[in-house]
Image (cartoon, rainbow, N blue to C red; front, side, top):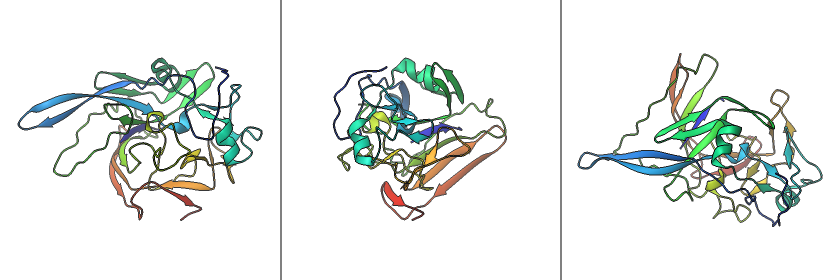
Length: 262
């Protein structure tokens, strides 16, 4: 499950994998509750992670592997070399707030739309709920149960879109299925949805840089050869004016890398 609002130069050793950098990951804590008729509501300690697409990819010298909406041709001339040269950097809890506008207080998650920071401007974010151990995504089994949440939409004006929905991502972010991914769910890897987005920078533990075309309208995005597909259920897409609930079926039963418009 995730909620989306529409939207240090260090010497390190590198190995051939989508693996984390030296900054310790500071997943912000978030309290949820599990409720039954017999026992009432019991608080559960979870945490939040930001999607890997928003994170800093860099080489050993601190140079960007992905800068703006293009891949660095020296660090990333091909998918294999890119994985060897680049790491997926962690974010401190303070960094979540100052860089991405993401913060938590007890059972409340706040996502700012635009956040100015020391290196530029962040627009939007995509966050996921981690399990209590913080090593995998929280998996919801909702048969014969209810799922409830409250959202403050007072600042979601016409033209903006807030969303909370389920997607069929691997519980560990793809780490067990793909040897090139050692970062896993803790670092927000493995995103997929029913639109099979092609703007995902790493899919199945590999750089999605083949046939990469920078966006003409978004200075931070582009499209690669591959997309990442899975079932999606939009529980809530809305602003202060309108709201929608939409199930998106898909012919695959797990996160699947597609090519072209498969």
